[in-house]
Image 1 (cartoon, rainbow, N blue to C red):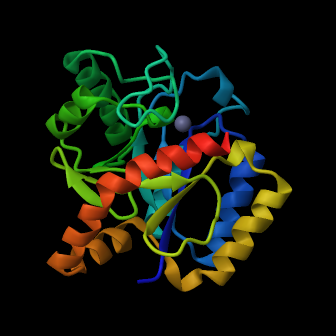
Image 2: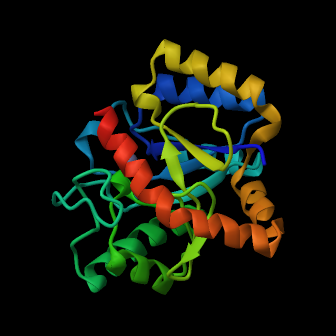
Length: 248
Ligand SMILES: [Zn+2]
């Protein structure tokens, strides 16, 4: 079973770094790669006020969606309130984990309302800093979300009534197997990083999915294969953590 890939671009908001975002957008358009765009509904994060607000930000998102790109709701305001690393324990800060179910639900709904006010409807959630807890998961299903772009696994899996599409890579890396989401933050991308992404996309073109292709591919897998991949998940997660800790 070869490896498949899916790109995700994080921190989309009207005040993002326009030059780097445009460069990545044009690169993906020219290569016919259709990533997930993680859109912050009401960005208040001062680190993401990198340019004057883009006037046609929401129109541009609609154009990209019509090209087959997907959108995920990236939290609400991208403001970290605490040092809670949540269930995954990847980054010690959170906009959601540690808050009550009601508080989290209110935030999710406020973000969803903003996106829908701009004509953007999505059932995919992307937690800022990978940080969420059981209340977040409960609130997500309560607010109508069906998919989550996160998780420590090689293949997607169902848990707490959500389809988790794992995300473990922050740059293009060739893997032996699995379905891997490669997360990019345009504001941090160097010249070398752009070149790496371009090279990788040209080499792996036939193995790069968009979100819907990835989900259909997963649904088409035979039941026994999905069970086998599910059985690999419990040992994979601690091994991944160990490897990450050893690389520090
Ligand atoms: Zn983010």
